[in-house]
Length: 501
Image 1 (cartoon, helix red, strand yellow):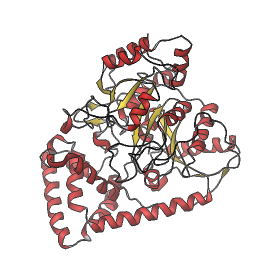
Image 2 (cartoon, helix red, strand yellow; image 1 turned 135 degrees about the vertical axis):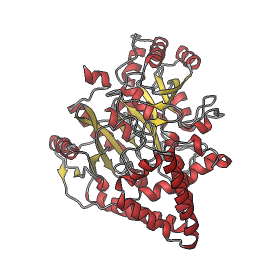
Image 3 (cartoon, one colour; image 1 turned 45 degrees about the vertical axis):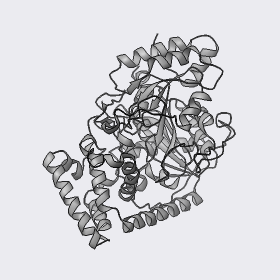
Image 4 (cartoon, one colour; image 1 turned 90 degrees about the vertical axis):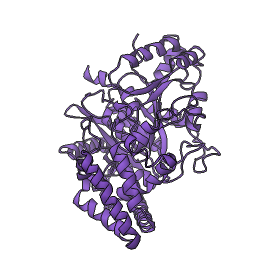
């Protein structure tokens, strides 16, 4: 028996009808994972999975469904590597709130950990610890990141449900590259306790999904306030029960494919405009032209984020630099050299500017439609999402040493000239714009905290394209209904194999 190729909700229905059993399903899942060349899982717990399947309560929302857990999540007794060689031997001694709810309220059968990019820092699917995770639509292409293995496993037909996290696009980006639905809820929708870093207040939790109802049910299971996360929101009555309740007619929509001024691959803007226009016409929406000028704060944002990574590594840094991916190591060296009070102040001012721009936009429209990614999935072996001068420098050992030397000089100079780091960052962004556009289409919704969803929107050159739809804070239910409208009118293949057929 092969693993279930429908959505997770229909698998639960099959369990309840006696058409399939959780035990047979988990056996088929484990066999498929072990035979797969996608490299979607970094750890399997066969014994625990079979025990959970034997005692599964199929009356629970996801009762008996084999599920992958992103390896940046924490499960008591499982490896807690954060996809890094540095922590390859560490074992978790607690379970995160999100995952605990998924296990207990949802009733899933946890099969193991799905691969991720190191510390969730890059939108690629390659690490020193796990190697390359491959796109089931084309194994030579990336899955993106950081929820790499989750997207590969769900689109690749290994499991029908897998968890994800999104701090700058990490659910939406891989969903877009693999033809899945990727919902980033309003900030705080699913709690991040009990020991999550608060800085930079952009990370949300969720899943990659084959269907709208899978994602809606997931939010119902895992959402709601928890005392260990003071930023978490009270539970929504029921996203799944409310599906289809919104009248989309008359909604004001701005179509801005290249959101934030990101350069798109040839053909992507025309494709996205066609998809957006079709959605608008079918449902009587109103297209509205607006000016949305967003500052590119990706560089300052990423540099500030490195504080939590440094806290995580503790005394291991900088001795562990050789075990880190070159990009993460370089990011830490750069952050130590360039981050000071003036850099932080500039980042906060840019964040205020971004928030004001987004607020003004949503005063004029209900929805913004953009591309999820600049184009179809890039090469699987790429360590950054676009070629840039920093990547060329890191590709050689002399280049890496040269960069450390330059950063050392910059750090010393910055102590005397506090405005130097911002000048260096801005000059680098001007000379090498690809350096600071990683996740440029998605990051704004993390900074602003509004919900955004990547909806499968056909293919270019045989590879999936995601249509990203943004809404105002707390209008997650509306986005589910927009996605549902697309799903009903133009059903997407639930797996790459289905697309191939």
